[in-house]
Image 1: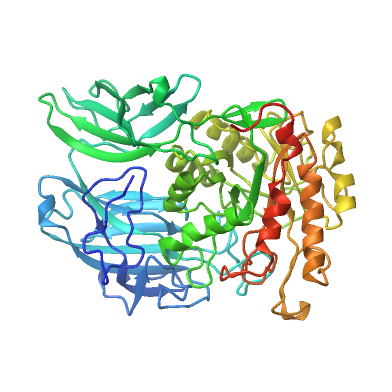
Image 2: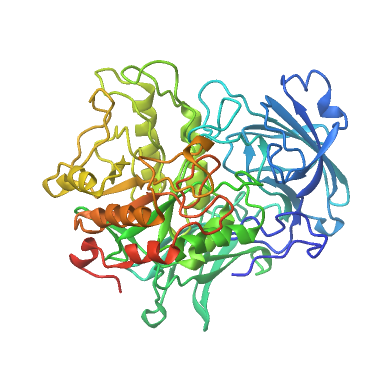
Length: 612
């Protein structure tokens, strides 16, 4: 499962040089991170002023956003638009193939021109998009790449935790504008493989593959070879000239079956080929797969048919110097290792679609994750009793791009399209009702293999949601126990408005977990007057912190009907000082004690089948 090294890797390699798409990797590629021409366009008048056709006034280090220190710009004021420009020579060795220009993430509305020709438009700050340069820049020729990214702060827009006012405050942080993940190129044949969809089938001991192509051609076939440390496990081949997305099944001999789990995150290698009628290989890619299942049984979410209590931590994926972009790949690995060391077996990837390499490391380290959309940004003026949440059709489109991107990762065990979309239930259907239902149904249609929670925490609007949850930041363990005690009688804690009004449809016996709790402020480096915050009254000593943490986690560990929890949060983030670790990832608690409080067997795990 090694991914290709970037051309020219070494001491002079560009920042973030690792292959950006590890679950669908080709040998030939070119990393375009590094120095680009750059100019801020605060009034979004650049097109009229000719910025598309002129050299920008400054420079920036891609893939870091201009608000970040690592970009070399460090401007945190509002930017209605930004412009990038770079000239790239398409490698002559790619002759005879099409050149694809990939952007892993650009926030928020991007337009791309190459050699003066518009080649791509994309809306959404979290998901990748591609431009085909055929007929615009051929191998051996220069490609003048110009990118305009618009990032308005008014109106509904999926921003996640990015503040729409100037300064950081509360749980809103410095904005990210423009390119914030890797930019790269790769050559592909005229007819080529597209991102595969790999579905594990534990019951039958097999993987089902859907291999979409750029277009059919007579005589083509697709071939897949599954492997492990002992060599080839299974192979399958099927005609590729009948369907745009040929399907095949890799049946695993019983003696070679090995499940993926947090205890044993086994990954099979997967070699994919597109061959012509004479057997010549036209396109090939490397991937991997994990054999695991996720199912619902009563109030239980099962992994491989077993009760695995999900000890999750809220991870927001922010870094002091890179903001939403990790400074290097080691930082992605370190965050997972920090979570594991503190006793968590997974994370809610909160209000951000994490980069693909994070999920790659979660796959290989056995770290359970819930994929979430950065939906904050749809709140409108007005009271929650009316129509204050107004997500639009772009939310559905952007979320489906994220689900398609991450579908094949075994570490992803659930989907969370929306978070804390508070709005009073009343007798009129609102945009929130329509979009919540659309996102839920679309997720289920695209991926029936995982449970979906329609909205984490506040406004459950879909009666048949697979999972029901709540957010509860009560700090007194005994009061917390009383509030959370009704699950056995199908009367769990449900978030409501300050006036007691209902935000959610009634609970119907689904699996339930407390998907945000704790958030205990512990900031030994400053006092309350320093502007930092967390939930509840500050512990007066480190010992008091640990006693509170142990008390709160015990409430949920002791509930046999609770399939998991999510503690807020992994690290401090700017003014939020409620992390298990500091913002710079240094220790601030007795991490071994945090882990010990969680590692005892949960009541959920005692009731029925145990992890194997």
